[in-house]
Length: 163
Ligand code: SF4
Image (cartoon, rainbow, N blue to C red; front, top):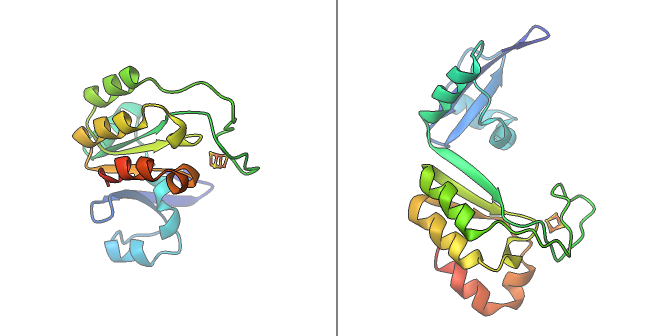
């Protein structure tokens, strides 16, 4: 990849399960990645492919490695943060249905599933969404503002079984 004479290279690092991009960097050792000041933001670069690839080459390249899927399971939220990047709304009714979720999970081989929102604890089928994810994926990331976990011991007890 070449943007305005700056060259970027990309490599998959199994040690941290990340595709990492480096700028004007010949060495692609794990050590370099860990020491890099960009390390904390590598999460956002994981799917940037190598130089001069076509879209189908990128697909092939990515399919060789474990895949992650992030599901926004609801637009509802019990907070109204100004910084919200999901445009979450307190009254939103749209929830990802468990049947659609199961179809996607069963068709794919995700090593990691992220459940986010809005606030995922407002989803009425949360327990089943986590249970379904845990059958296929070895890692489940659950992104919550924590309010419902704190006030509902039962809720916390139910889902803690999977983590
Ligand atoms: S808690 Fe999260 S999802 Fe809810 S409004 Fe705040 S940033 Fe958005």
